[in-house]
Length: 217
Ligand code: DC
Image (cartoon, rainbow, N blue to C red; front, top):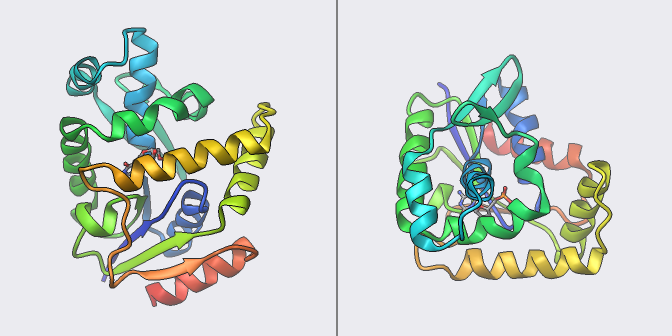
């Protein structure tokens, strides 16, 4: 039977890396829900309006956010634009928590996410997957790591993309995003009691993948 696997956790915990590898091993689809909120934030910046709640909701309502599975790769589209790379800029990252706090934006994204998971065979990562999007997921994992390690991972990721930001700045941004994501009113980042806690501080990626595979049993 094809299962649904929910992976939640804070920024930089390694969710997307792990979820992608696990999906590949299981022959499942990987759904990056953060990328969907990022696509909305990208569009707001692209349109160039003031990012007020009203403007963000107006743009999100009209926007067609889609994940396209091309072979093994997942590409993110905002209407007809491939935004897979452009949703990872510091500007998008700075705006996305605000976008993800808005009820109408979340309602639209959650509906799309549930549709994509309807037939099972998905590994979905985000902040509210086990608690809200897929409360009946077969496997629920809460992935985390120390803030120092998460900032270091983000720094390496950004460096590889040509951004050289001070690690202290990245750590402060991650802490701010953790706070915004955990304290927002609608579907905050929480660990549901039944989720297995995996602290990946100091753990090599392969070991984390192995552990998650065991849980997917
Ligand atoms: O995982 P990420 O950094 O790409 O997520 C981008 C933002 O979107 C993050 O600040 C939290 C938010 N998010 C959310 O609120 N719910 C999700 N299911 C996924 C991401």
